[in-house]
Amino acid sequence: MERVIVEADGGARGNPGPGGYGAVVVDPESDVVLAERSGSLGVTTNNVAEYRGLIAGLEAAAELGARVVEVRMDSKLVVEQVSGRWQIRHPALRPLAGRAAALIEGFDSVHLGWIPRARNTRADALVNAAMDTEAAETVPPDRAEKARVASGGARHWVPSSEPATRLILVRHGETPLSVERRFSGRGDPALTERGQAQALAAAARVSELLRDDAPQIVGSSLTRARQTAEQIAALLGGGVSTDERLVECDFGEWEGLTFGEVRQRWPRELDAWLHSTGVAPPGGESFDQVAARILPAVVELRERYSGQDVVVVSHVTGIKLTLREALDAGAHFLHRLHLDPAGISVVESWTDGGISVRLVNDTSHLAGIVT
Image (cartoon, rainbow, N blue to C red; front, side, top):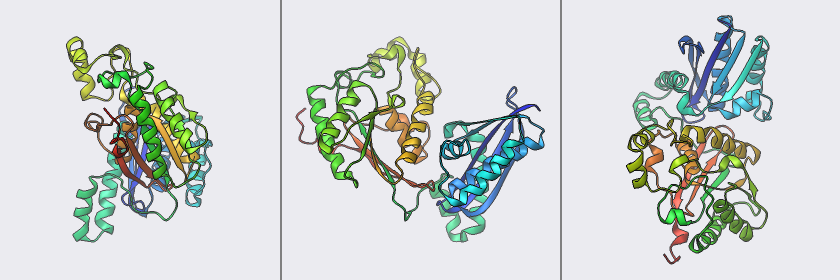
């Protein structure tokens, strides 16, 4: 087999906790699985397990005689570190990265790419099976079943002694389109007068959530987000940097329409969109496509500002995707979570992969604003 795809993953329940890795080697033409590798790792961390998944996948590809390999992982950290774009700070990961690099040298070409966890289901299933086995062997019997039920097979957070990276996620204030509950994506309405007041109130609330005197403020380039970020920067001091990847979903032909109007004109397309994150509105983006640009931006912020506070001023879709990833939630989460204009959410993360959602859609600061 000249060319193959490697899908790899790893995880540790508790981080550190009972860990496992998984990898599949796939024929890119037929999507047939050519090889599977998985194993339990004892007590370890997510990042170690993810590296072990990559190594197992590369070894399996080499055994099949592959010369060109495309690696797909939902660990942005491993992809960026092995590609040489991010530093490897944790000493436990350096020998694993060295092993991966040595294997890569044995192929003619290897491309490493990040994919959302929802698209890495085959490797993830192997990881969860390995973690189930490890948990049953390492956790006392009276706690093992309870731990499996509580985790649902997901990786979850335990306290860490190192400073957390705190992302303070702020949705922009009200616009004319949000007042009328219309699809508002790449259109560029400004804040209403009430939206400006909401942004100012959000700035005051953000100041209460900060640990740092001078947080980083990063936002979408769209006017409504930029105006909100500027209100926050005016109160806290400093400037605002923008990232085009943080802009709202492109709703295509649905832009500016109400849900009811879309239902009348595109009933089948709307049903398909509601049932699959891979379906896009006519002429627009799917949620999977949005995740593919927004989640790497979020990972980069965590890496660049490790242990610091970062205020991220964005839109409904980006904040929902960030929260879904942090909570390891399913696809329907996106349609079940409501986010208000100028609502604030907080996610903390650690370099070992630990993550904690501390606040979701806080609107306490908006109570005094006249409707």
